[in-house]
Length: 106
Image 1 (cartoon, rainbow, N blue to C red):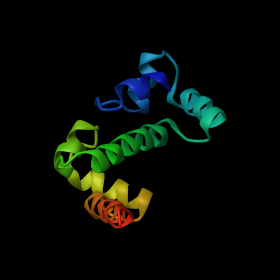
Image 2: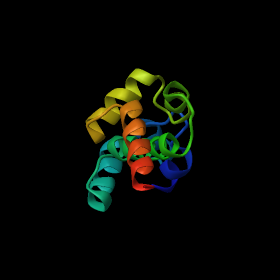
Image 3: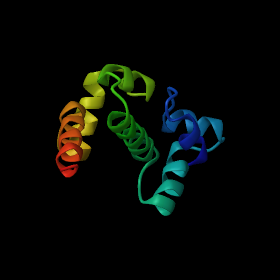
Image 4: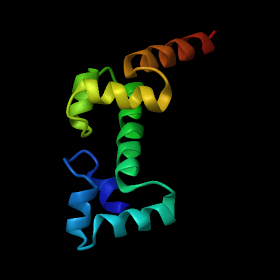
């Protein structure tokens, strides 16, 4: 988990992590399932999504830039994963969050 938390933006996967720690992907997934009830790849995706979400809320960086910087490869992949996670695209999420913040100020 620490390796993912520190290197989530790099091109890593469950397979590369299993190789790095000299275990099979099956063993690594079993250990993750026991600890966090997620597979390695799902945990990695969640960490990437949470960090991308933070950038969406705190910056004006383009979604494409965020996608590439946080290991999604392209905006389409980030959009698909983010929508599955939050029910809206990253751009719509950012817009809704800004609107919510603006209206609470009054």
